[in-house]
Image 1 (spheres, helix red, strand yellow):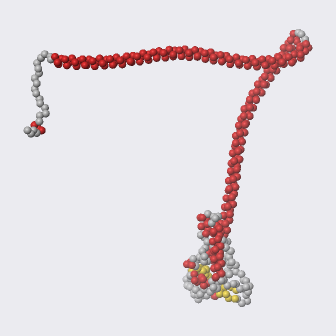
Image 2 (cartoon, one colour):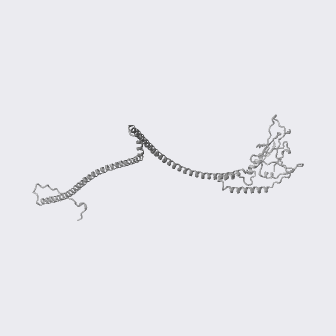
Image 3 (cartoon, rainbow, N blue to C red):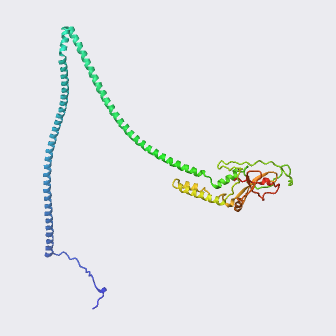
Length: 420
């Protein structure tokens, strides 16, 4: 037979009717009695265990009480011993105090005894003199009074001596304190003196170092001054162009000016104007070369020798620059060397080369101006024409400028003298 799970009955419920009062069964009663006996035996067992525990605790308590009683007895004995020891300590302290006072009294009595011995010794030493003095004074009321006065005076003198001794002792203590303070001050002064000596030595050392630095700086300054005193070729050339001129350079181009009294310009009129003589001006920085009338003809300028000389000078400057590397800082050396001209910079850059020209302004006067020229023109102007003058022992270089304005052209006034 096949049975599915839903047909399986797991539980059954029955309606049981309560039994009416029936007589108890003997087995049921026996079971209940056995249960009660088992519970009673368990309770008795627990009671015995608790009783044993209580007995153990009572024994422990008795032991503790006995220990406490013994400790209390020991404590009482210890307190009695401490009280007796305290009494003994008080007694000993009292005895120690009495002993200290006795020692103090003994010391005082000993000092007094020494004093009495000294007095007795003094009296024994003075006894013959005193007996002789008493014999001289005689016996009577007047003699007794005189002796009493003498004793009072001796006592006063003794008191004065005691006061003087006390004052001397105080003065001695005061002097000792002063000596102690003076010794302390002396030690402080000695220590300060040692510190001052050390500072003086360090200061002298710093002073020597400063002197060495000053000497080195002076050497560097001398080298710088010597370097700065050497003028550059461009500056020297420009100074010559400016300071050798008889009048200041006016940077103006030649032009015609209107007449002062009328508006018409007469180009056929001629003027005879007195012009000042040529005077050379000396430069405060570079001395201007003077014009000399030598008996010998001036030498011809050799461009090859001149270039060779400039090359040698530049090589010497390079050697000086190498010598300055170890003495001067980098920024000073660069600032000084950057001002030196390069090779072949006789007249500066070739683009800004010009010549100072003297010409007429068209109204009978003359003016000075700068005419820009190219570098080949300047190079060809170096080749100068030499013309000997008859009846004179000197020769001058003459350069004619055909580009000058042709109004009132006077060849004698168009001559430019170049000093050699």
